[in-house]
Image (cartoon, rainbow, N blue to C red; front, side, top):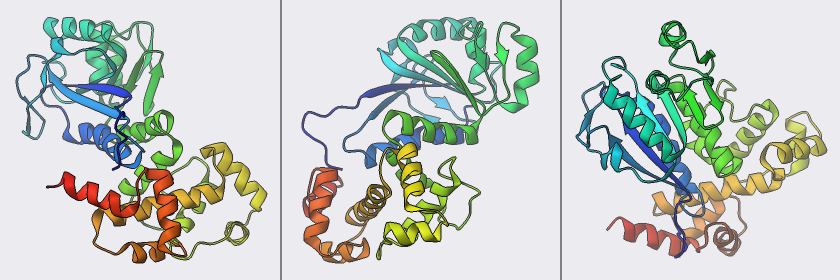
Amino acid sequence: MHIPPDSSPQLKIAFLLVDRFSNLCLSNALEPLRAANSFADAPFYAWEFYSLDGEPVRSSSGMAVLPNGKISDMGRVERLYLVVSYGHLANDTPAMRRALQQAARRAGSVFGLDAGAWLMASAELLSDRRATVHWDLLDAFSERFLDVEVEQALWVEDRDVLTCAGASATLALSRHLIARDVSPAIALDVDALFTPPVRSDALPSFRDPLLTRATRIMRENIEQPIDLKHLSARLNTSPRTLTRRCQGALGMTPGKLYQHIRLSAAKALVEGSTVSIAEIAVRCGYEDPTALTRAFRLRFGAAPRAFRGETANKLT
């Protein structure tokens, strides 16, 4: 990835891992952010890991994670993710409550994943707020914390706190945050990386099914792009309607979206293969390598050959 010399991540995140946390929940929170960094012009997210005492934390499957330090060492961050799954009652201690209260003062917002809302509520971070928790805990949570307005939802955001219901919900949340933080187009790239390439609307990229079908057709026709008129006809809509819906959801025309998808495909080939730049141009629907190079440099800040060289140097 081409990184301008003066670039630095814009959003700092701390992950507080609690014993017996879910690997899947952490991965669904973190991996989309890592992917978004790789697709963006420069890294947008930066993160560190913390535990209550700075000692290694074991996940529910026994995987040990060595944190960057104890939570009291955490500096100012935009977001604090509290990753709690099994054993939330055992971890609901006075020391944990004090640590959360102190850390929350150094965070712009606090996100509770899976059972994280339980510890947040116990630390009085959710008083008079709306919140959700893992669906297995909803009833017990609502009975235990009467000052919290409990909702059955994938996630609930109320001012400077956000709670999320579980691992699968965390993946959807990450996609939502990337679209909001970085851009809907980068979220679309992340979707393509984590969503299997099947002809199904079961996992839509958008709430708008028309755009879900449009992007699928674009991805299936990268080498020989379809013009707007024929694309609209395949979607049984008008070019004007497709353009309006695309502008509303992504802030770009269908043509710009198509170019974004083709350049993302080109970047994947540049980074992950030894295919020549001329062949990549053909595979991604460009008339010649010069046209690809011009568009590639405009988006990623470097020509494909230079970009490939930078990627290789990082691996050596």
